[in-house]
Length: 324
Image (cartoon, rainbow, N blue to C red; front, side, top):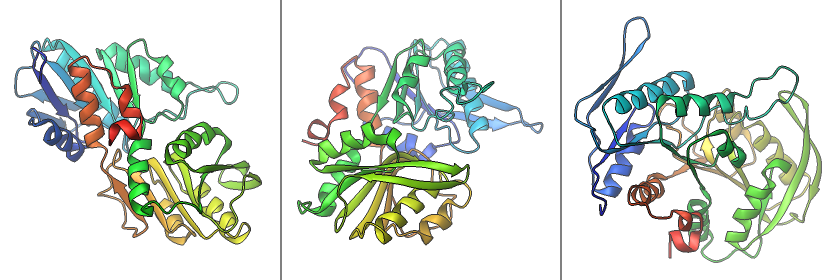
């Protein structure tokens, strides 16, 4: 590391293997930290080495149980601040509560803004995350936010998978709101784009309204930022296969939340493959042969190195620069 300050990487309980992967990429070791729980459920954090004058990167994903892991992160930030760390960067591979970013109906909270306030008030100087549900969420913070994209990882994966044979491949956005994200992916892949215009008939059901673009007889890649219950992916894959007569339906998303009956829906769906990054730990979910994971730690390691050395990270948003 070129900078004169020391770098420290610590983590909570949500994503230890991910933090260890970052350390391996940087040639560092994970700082010794205990994050435990008292008998009444209160969280305790103990730093076993000095962080005075260091730039500390706290790695914690806000996956389930999100409230426990959020509180762990806030307490770790406070502990580092009170231990005189010079800079504190909250590295949040998956940012929870990001879907609660607006008032959809009367008297709704804007929970994403509340979480931003909590992280800032705890003492974080910067946030490093990946694929916020809405990029505008960065504006909720009064500190710098670097929002990495999973696109370069997926571009690398599919270029190797298809080995240059992509004449019959098209990218599909499963919802209108994901169009800009899917378009960016399609442009870096050099593929065409189709969009589903759909609406929810009920909270737990999805109704397809229209398909904009040509998909018949093609292999399609559904592209979104996350998969939670997998209901949308299940329904869209069924329509593409049965009504649009596509050749194959694949899907990818940065975050595999996979709550409720998600695994069953993926197994029952027409999807031949579903690819995530490992921003959410997957060791505890039930096995599904259709699901694959890409390692995001190397991308975060490059971003952390550049942030520490005060170098731009903009080149990490494009496949050509990420993997020349």
